[in-house]
Image (tube, rainbow, N blue to C red; front, top):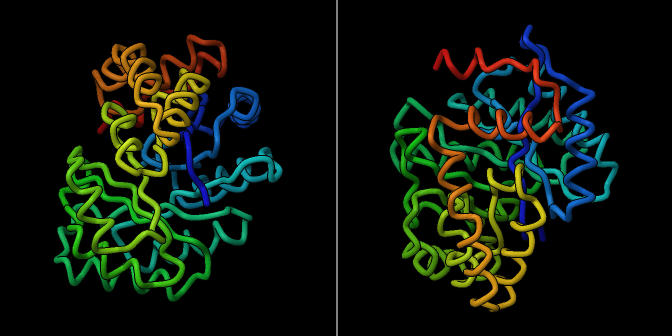
Length: 274
């Protein structure tokens, strides 16, 4: 089971837009040292929407290689094309990823039945643990708890990253899907509360900047230590807010650069164009 503080890793870049592999390796070592429980390679924070297919797959492979089996690696392999999502998911499995994170098809605005068939097709095509990713604020597509419940009966669909900000969905999804499906929170502000309600962890942007504190907060929440979890969450509140003052990942890449963890010459150009 992949759980705890799962950091949505930034993808460092040079001014040219090329991936900065040296900084990527430094970041992986930093997170392992700081107690991060797992990494997401090429999620939203890792610029999945801006890397081309070769870059996308190369970053996943590099993160897997740098980690060397010490913690799990979840590969972001979603796309608004079912065929493309299958290709990316297959290549992530070949690269050695432990699981894949698959966002709902953005822009297309599929029906709930369309979502079910999309995820079913990917799960049947590639035998790797798959985590559903629902973030309607980015995709203009909301995967309802009932659809998650249907998909939970597919053996290799093992979790859902729920980013609506609606804590009431935790119980509803659990009732529909059963205890075998993992519940991973995406939005950091209510992450402690989410885990106190039975969530298995959080895919975190803030963990790029404060990995040790986020790990301690999530561990406390999962253990039912409400006082400690909420105290740490309060300490992190300003950081949570500031990392979203502009579109992610602009603020977090700036912060990580200022920390000296990646070269200051990486590019914001892709983000600023969107």
